[in-house]
Length: 102
Image (tube, one colour):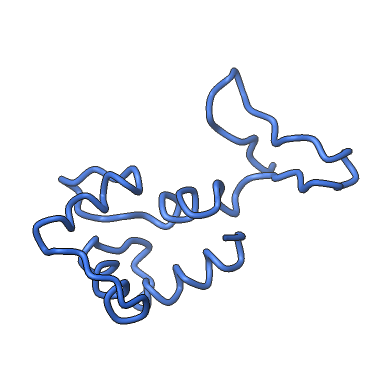
């Protein structure tokens, strides 16, 4: 999934523009749009899949986009064949974090 598709999906899920969704919202979307059933006893696993803390009971836009397409819009991403020579995105100090736009 590319960034634009992930953003379009996020906008569909976060229709009230809260900046976060609950796992129950995502579960209902999966059932309605994807015809995929998740038992209500297993919904809490969605928080872990998106790197969210279950106690907060919300999945943020950044967590959602990072999980689906590997980055959020605040980061520089070097596309393959780009003017930079098709290099991989640069990481700071070996951490799993992209360089921010400045």
